Amino acid sequence: MNIGIIGLPNSGKTTVFNALTRGEIEPTAYSSGHMEVHSATVKVPDERVERLAAMYKPKKVTHAQVQYNDIAGLAKGLGESGGLAGPLLNEITNNDALLHVVRAFQDENVLHPEGDIDPARDIELVETELLLNDLMLVSNRLERIGERITKGGNSKEVDALKQEKVLLDRLLIVLENETPLREVELSDEEEKSLRGFSFLSQKPQLVLLNIDDEGDETVAGRYTRQRQHVAVSALRGRLEAELAQMDPEEAEEFLADFGIEEPGLSRVIHLSYALLRVQSFFTLGDDEVRAWTLAVGGTALEAAGSVHTDLARGFIRAEVIAFDDLMAAGSMAEARKQATLRLEGKDYVVQDGEIVRIRFAL
Image (cartoon, rainbow, N blue to C red; front, top):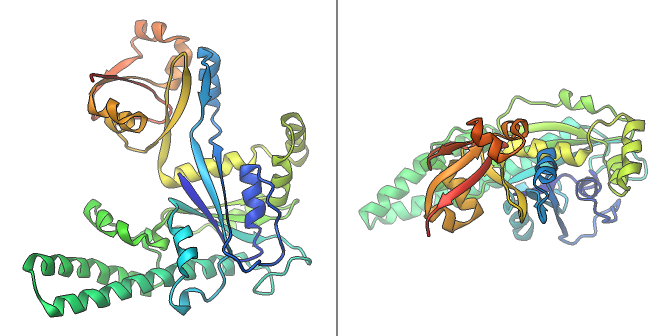
């Protein structure tokens, strides 16, 4: 799972990146002029993994992982000049979701590119850049389709182009009305046909307000918009970046002093999971306790495939038990006696936190 961190220059993207990944990248109050991307993979915090490890005492414990990519700042007007530049566009495109850092802190030593602090304006500025890029993509494609249809040729190809044109004409109207493509209801077939475009405004997005050390995190509610696949939260970026560098005991005292119930890393990852509609399931053994990521609504066969293709190919049945049921039973043997360990077929929809063991034949 890859999440791209975007935002206007001097929004504190790198500070937030450090907070989330325990990185030590030096933030600057100016742009270097180079296309810079910082990446780091972090484990998804999940108390259930630790409790399962305590029960099984495996040789290895593996959490699910997420990669954060801190991408160069988006400047106002980039989309108006023919779309985002190749390297920048590629870096943003190669992410499953976007974490949009919005400046909501005061610092006279760090100039805001627009001259003052206005989170609502900045949210719209970046959204506009994403929309303009997608508008350019759709317009250019429609122009090429029109030229191809005019030339005629293979009837099947022409019919397919006409069908594509109908869908893109629909999207063009949406974009011209300044509506992100993530709000458009699409069929599975339509979704599949659009994957090659990698539209930026179609990606799920988490708007993260980067607030002062003493800032009120409830300020996020002021900017929450009733839009699909968008969440809004707030983070004391600089404070959390300092916290990320501390040892566990010192960090715990720090959290208590500032009234922070959960580190920003945990909260933002959990919000990212919800936004991407993914969940965790677990596999157990003496060698390893491991968390895996699966789409909400994913089947037992898909869970098997995410562990190993051989398990999906030779799938027979899945042994499944809810995390709470295993904890209550105390062991798999006792869970079998209590009949809370079940056998399910390949079409069974796996639920968050279930332990899954695949029976398969080679």
